[in-house]
Length: 135
Image (spheres, helix red, strand yellow):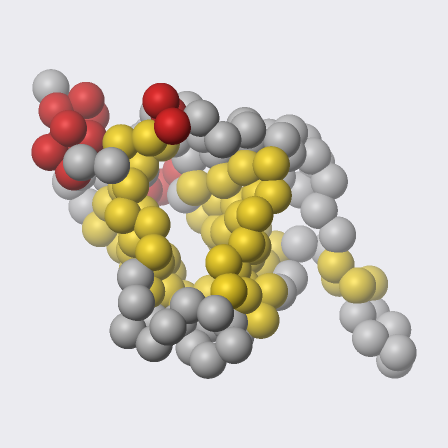
């Protein structure tokens, strides 16, 4: 897996003068079945979230409100992605280190995940991630 596997996915928009609607369906708009949904909110200015990688978890990160940046790192290259549209999600494949920062006021970050929470799936130490990734 590399940074080229991570990409912005445009989600469907149903336009309506009363307000738009966007939906996400497992194995349809996204390349995995959704097993868990969580969200980050009330992130203090200047704070960072993430700072880990996953062994097998696939995720879609959506800025439901406000904006934030996601820094992706495959151990060789890094890429910063700015999220600020609730109809776009950033797909992150396994074995990509991620950090979230630059949160705007009142931002809400929703994450759709392919598995239930499992601490054993995490790399929380960058050096350990690099050893697993590149030997």
